[in-house]
Length: 217
Image (tube, rainbow, N blue to C red):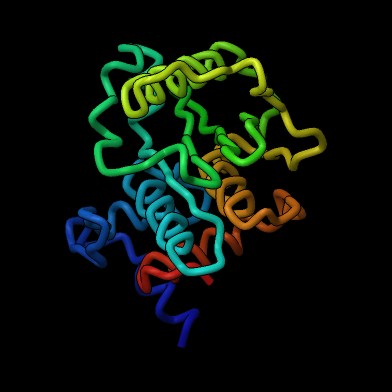
């Protein structure tokens, strides 16, 4: 049954045992265990989840979504947009509905959602922070990407940025990764964000099941 399966997957050892492979990623017990209790989600888990969101976007009728991995934001902020131009060789970014960017700020995870339909960058932080520097880096990236792939300048004057109001806030120091993932998942289907801190233990267990089955519930 579902709960038993989840509990077995959360057993911490042997930590190197591979529980699931997909999207050129491997999730070991050690990775999966980051979903237990109040552990910090690691890159592997977040990247796997982002891939599942993209997968769902490939289904006819759903929003077309591209999600960057957890290393993208650090790269554009530290090395500039030119360092990631080849990451989208096979992706037509400007034909997407949404582009998701996990934002790793050292000790904290946020989520940036680039709404390509409405020309808006939305920044979700479960601790209520602002990140104008990050938003500017994403604007620079969009401009460089457009120039590189389409050979013309992108007019950014029509693009806005938003810090969505009244989004749920975390009440502990360890659920930021989970919040970031759920902000992305809700945004990827235009759902209004109606969860809060109390849902996190449930979301963690549910994510274990989703990863095991490579399928969002």
